[in-house]
Length: 422
Ligand SMILES: Nc1ncnc2c1ncn2[C@@H]1O[C@H](COP(=O)(O)OP(=O)(O)O)[C@@H](O)[C@H]1O
Ligand SMILES: [Mg+2]
Image 1: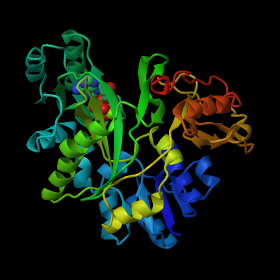
Image 2 (image 1 turned 135 degrees about the horizontal axis):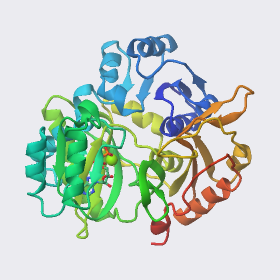
Image 3 (image 1 turned 120 degrees about the vertical axis):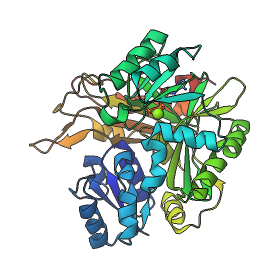
Image 4 (image 1 turned 180 degrees about the vertical axis):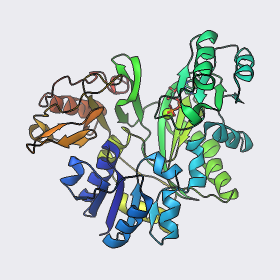
């Protein structure tokens, strides 16, 4: 058994910690959350303090550090850890550029013949306004840098695309992250989140997942960090999978290796599968995605700890890690995503957790002054369930939700519905 230190404190980190704990490993987290506290030890070190985190890893003599969120990866936390002799699962800052800059990732894909939407990168409004009109269908407008999932406008009209350009290049909507903008041809099809654990050369893949980004049922209303997710995604057939491995995963890993920045960590490939069953890259992320990680960890039928350790040792083998169907339904706080209410008391978690096949992951919870559990804003809980079939997993998740209560709670009743009817 090994000792792990997980950096981060959301639903993703709770799911990873839960999985490692279930496999018998010792789990530490920084800063963690109340869910992680139940299965391991939390340390109050902030995600943005590399020196303190290195010292913590050394003091604890952990076997592996697992970095959850993108910001510390982009800021080079994995490099600092490696230089200090600490084993770490997560890409270097150089490899994390794939997520840090959408413009650079498009250049990388073009250079390696990886299928993705046609694009134009601009840094001035004049350039941008001229480019918008070269797209017959209104283009998707993307702030180049990290924008916490808020930097993309899927414009319905050319005017809307122009407004989005003005917001970035004139209004400074995303600061430096929006000083460069990518305009992209709009793709159609179904989106799939595909996670690839790699040692830089080999690929161990998780089940294809789908998430639900909109706040409202039927995919309506504003975008959120994700209101639910499920796996496997039926659209991702063996044929689609084979194309994705050959056209996208293999050239991405080889391309990064050839550029002297091998990818050690989990590569999240955001895909659009078109009507012909051909995969196109929408974006890369360089870490586990939330909430998709929750069902993937709950349903995984292979040892996660060994896989992560093998990736860091460079001894991973190419494989499709098996898993059972699973789904997570996110419960968000009042006002989310426009605002988010804090301090509402959460009841019924214990009863919910007793539903067969169900685990409730903490995303935005905290202990109150009275030692009770309360909301800490945003997405609060991920009610996750696995079963032999997806519709049964969903039934279990919603049965568990019926036990949970907090003021202003919001959740979608239609998570996974399309897939469970296939
Ligand atoms: N070229 C595209 N065609 C159609 N939809 C897109 C395109 N690019 C992005 N989108 C939509 O916008 C969402 C967010 O874009 P993405 O590139 O994943 O950025 P981020 O996750 O950083 O906000 C995607 O999940 C997808 O729904
Ligand atoms: Mg995305």
